[in-house]
View 1 (spheres, rainbow, N blue to C red):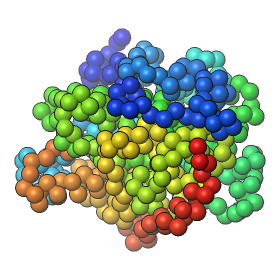
View 2 (view 1 turned 180 degrees about the vertical axis):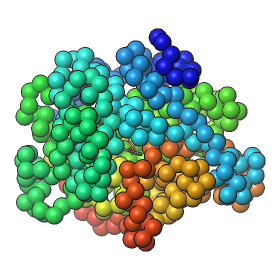
View 3 (view 1 turned 60 degrees about the horizontal axis):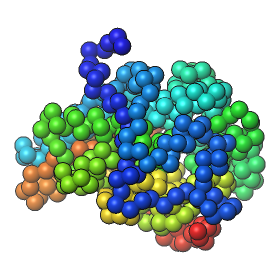
View 4 (view 1 turned 30 degrees about the horizontal axis):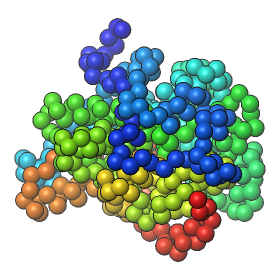
Length: 452
Ligand SMILES: *Cc1c(COP(=O)(O)O)cnc(C)c1O
């Protein structure tokens, strides 16, 4: 392969890492909502191509990355591992209290989502699929998939959560430049959408609702398949290129982390950076702590219930065992759209349930202040989602400082925030508010969660 950049392409991983066979206990299977039995490949064949279905249930520890996918990865991979030394100084840390971050904002979509968009489009094209439908929360997933579909010659329809469609018009433009059709969800095109509009014409929409619309669209259009940007096992799998690269990079920098921190929406980017390090910890080679950071407005790990639930409002998906706030959860219109999903991916939920990781919830005003401090020191404006991890990394560093302990912190900077300037403008104007998702709302939503 001809070298494209002056980077070492050998350092782009050749395999994805599947944590499933390494868990001390196997994760609970996805269930068919009608029969209550574990779903088989045929149950998913209407939604996904077989290449991805095989990965979803795989118990192979490593899965080869196809050459064609790796060839596209080299547009932005390997991504840099950066020491936040100016931030360290601003926090008054000692030399042995170090903060590193893995920067996924260098991808074409500006976030880690491209890591899975490319293989998903690839396996669909391999299966002869002509068209995909998907949802997007903040627009990052839609932009990532639109580029991947453009590369592999697939048509794409995107149901974009209405509040983001309004707050982030430029994400829509990006998707449309790649030839995608983008609609503000809920739409009048689907039954789920029409019902939601009837219930509340001014609804903000939600990721769970947009997923239902995309799934309904696919079921009604033979030859189309569905694609999801987080939550599912195959998505988390694709993201492990982040952690595999980071593992090599911290080795070269003599910076093996004591703590790995990442924001969690559906959990894919967190899995991506954390699972390869968890493998080392499970093998007894390291003693790293893992911290997932979520918004107080959408606290699925810290306040949710670990149970079987639907992945969407319309109850069209298989039942997944996850920490959930209830599938009819309507999030507050906070500015980290990518973290507004009602539940947490089954593999992350399982890791949390087994005590392999910790979780914290943080309010958005503090998150934006941390983002500003990070930008002023490191020069990168983070996505509001990623800034959750920055805040937690700063807190972790300050705790080490207070204790007078050495600590190496690694966090995942999942994306840049240059298409989130509207949110930052509101932050500067003092217009951002904090939300705590009320316990009463969780209790009420649990009444609609099917007991498996
Ligand atoms: C989508 C997104 C997230 C959250 O999704 P995960 O699946 O939890 O990773 C985080 N950061 C950015 C920049 C995103 O686009």
